[in-house]
Length: 229
Image (tube, rainbow, N blue to C red; front, side, top):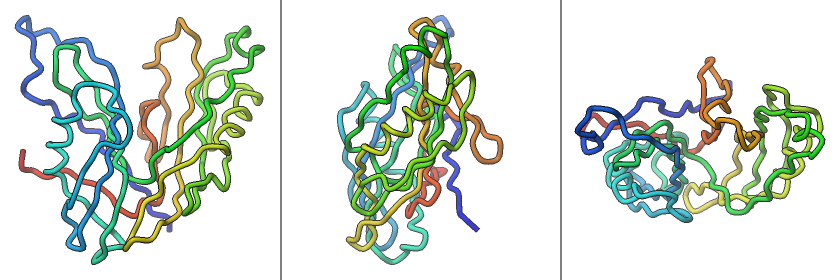
């Protein structure tokens, strides 16, 4: 039976984001990616940003992550390197809420999918969720449409799948050896006047996910939160 790691969807509100009026500050959803190195005991041996930090919460988030617990799964007793993708709602006045956190390979290079002009003119919008088979070398071995929502056309779905076959990933490592992965990766097609909050998708157990949440199906390392804050 395939093990599916569900990302954490609980919001971890930090205490320093409140406004005097009591009205929540406007927020922007951001994605932070970290390289996480685990020792043979499963404890964090190192954590560093992977790629460019999109907002202002990277340092605070990295400090928070050091209190999280990681499960090396089948790699227990071995060192491991994984990539932690954290989606946060980042408040304009400072602070953040964690939306989801998943482990797996990290995107290293991508070609944006084409948005066919005919579909743009027709107002076709929605989500294409791709199932990606990523080899130990980081290349996409296979890409298939897992599900499409809204008014996504066959041309839009095909464009997303075609583009993803050129993507490259940085793979997870267990005991120094790169390992393959399987991912559900959402591609959102929206016009300039549409609200990105409407671009979400339904994953395992009927859970709703943000358009920025990538769901690894077979991560070698999984993550949970500690009670200590």
